[in-house]
Image 1 (cartoon, helix red, strand yellow):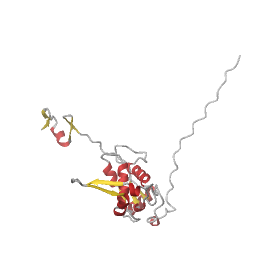
Image 2 (cartoon, rainbow, N blue to C red):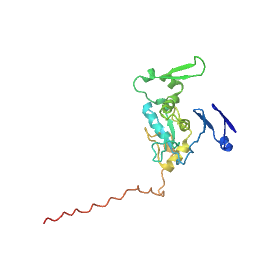
Image 3 (tube, rainbow, N blue to C red):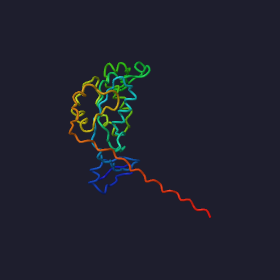
Image 4 (tube, rainbow, N blue to C red):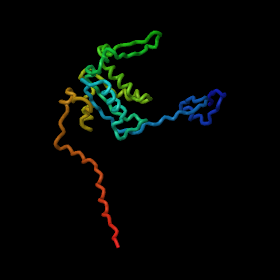
Length: 222
C-alpha cells in the first residue's frame, strides 16, 4: 500500500493498520488519526423543564450545562456524559428589552443570493421551538460532540410531550428532575407516591472530625 504525498510516493509498512485507520494530511505528511474511545459515563437522567416566562439566554445556558454533563462529578470534557432534557411550553419564552423586534436570525440556502433573515417574533410564530434550540446550540462547545448533545434536547411548543415513560422512570430511580422553573403540571399527577416499604436512602458520607491538637507544654523557668 502506498500513500501519495507532496514529496512522492511513500510506502506504508503496516498495510493492515493503514486500512483500518483514517489518514489525516498535516503539512504534507500522512499521519493516522487516533480517536479517543467513549468511556462509561453512568446512566443518563431525564430532566423536564417548563420554559414558561423564562429568559431565553439564562435558560439556554442552564440547558447547555445539563447536556454537557458539567453538573456531574464524573464530568470528562472529551466524553459525552450529559443527560436528556425535555423542554415544554417553549412558545412562552421571554426576551429582555426589544429583542422580539430587533433580534435577527439568518441562514443561507447555499444558492447565490440565498441569505434568509427573519425577526425573532416571526420565528416564534412560525417555528416556536427553534428559538431555544438555536440559543442552546450556540452555547454548546463547538466540537464533534455538539451534534450528539443536541440530539438529547427535546423542545416542544406546548405542554404535551411523548417522553412520559422515560421521565417517570427516571423519577422513580433518581428522584424528581425539574432543575429550573416551576414543576410541570402535565405528568406530575401520573407519578405514584413512594411506598411505605421502600428502603430508606443511606445517610450522606461525612468526614470524621480531626483529633484535637495536643496541649502545649511550656518550658519551665530556672
